[in-house]
Length: 180
Image: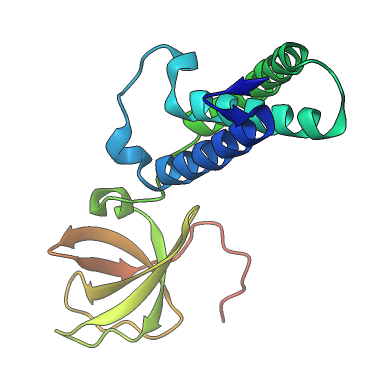
């Protein structure tokens, strides 16, 4: 059987290459093409995955079997539907509900404990590092009451103003260290 004057193997191969290229472009520019919340199976990622899987299965079946073209098309479509459903429920759906950003706001830093990595002089600036679930954040810091704070001290973030953290020396209530 031929479609548009091409043998079915070529049609499947060209479709596979085109759908694969469109999938790569969609992955790169998904934020621009995002149409919002709609019917989940009309998501471009789901449609492109279906076309890619169907073309791949059809191409392999055309080369490996001697079934009729309509049987191969039916088997490829059925396999693509099953694999697409699995892809949607086990990959795309969990990814869409996952936390989409590791960004933080300056207000979210208030009340957190940080460690001084560059000493904070009187009426000057030093640097602190804050451990978050997204990694380490390094920020400029100054003493809240213009006091000096030494390196490797733990500090509590009291205020944030224009990207500068204003901190105070922090002593935990329940400390495991013995003080002399």
